[in-house]
Image 1 (tube, rainbow, N blue to C red):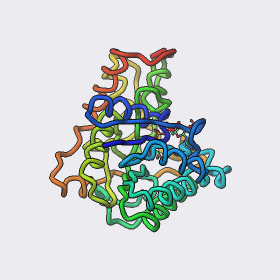
Image 2 (image 1 turned 180 degrees about the horizontal axis):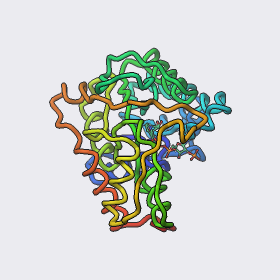
Image 3 (image 1 turned 90 degrees about the vertical axis):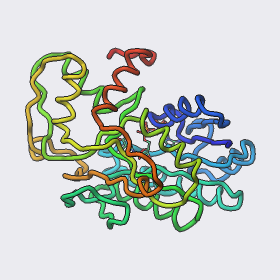
Image 4 (image 1 turned 30 degrees about the vertical axis):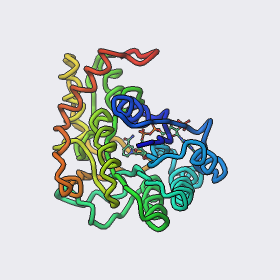
Length: 289
Ligand SMILES: NC(=O)c1ccc[n+]([C@@H]2O[C@H](COP(=O)([O-])OP(=O)(O)OC[C@H]3O[C@@H](n4cnc5c(N)ncnc54)[C@H](OP(=O)(O)O)[C@@H]3O)[C@@H](O)[C@H]2O)c1
């Protein structure tokens, strides 16, 4: 297949291009400086030039807290962008795989959330990502909407790199222990996305590493796997207020994926090990960790 990745300079976009390079697919990637997904002319020119069978949309406004005060700008990328992509894919018969987030949920669930659960976002970012999903669903039947969570990849920035930097400075880390989710390594997510595109069964999918933990549990694992020995103390959400509220519980059940007969993604701690090994083997340019 010919597969175009937009938002190709982000954490997930870069990992997808590395993953696709190991397959027989023909891959190309563009980011905002060459193709702005908000611009129908730019998107149409790209699709007519590349003529892909599928587009994977990794482009997004991901600054969750900034979206609270810059909601219109965030929505430009997270709502208008997917709508423009879907409208351009429809007449050309292109499959669109669009990435979304666990932040479309409000965090009140008490068990893993499946794809049929009603979303109820609590933040501007979550509202925009949900509206982006809805724009794709309403516009294009041949869509894959993939919600993932707590994502980290080679280039960052991400929670793992922040924890490593703080831990190496010394002193105890104080990390939120009352928000639960499934940390997900791009190195495990990207091949699963390619598989979903190959299968091409339209719908909404949850895709994360298996298992769950709190941010504090994740930080503890990061410190241990990196061979560091700083204490990781639990704090509550109230002790670490952020402009955008985060869901207290957003563990995603990957039911639609498993209904396809696919094996669950590896446990989140295996993802963390894989990530640290990847960075040790090939540190990104300018990396300090
Ligand atoms: N990161 C997470 O924890 C997380 C969790 C759940 C879901 N997700 C979702 O997963 C997807 C990938 O996330 P990520 O962490 O890889 O994001 P990322 O690293 O922030 O990458 C997003 C990329 O999109 C580019 N972009 C921004 N506006 C654009 C536009 N108008 N046209 C084209 N490209 C544009 C960004 O460029 P600039 O950097 O120049 O803006 C950046 O290179 C997103 O849909 C995100 O919502 C992420």
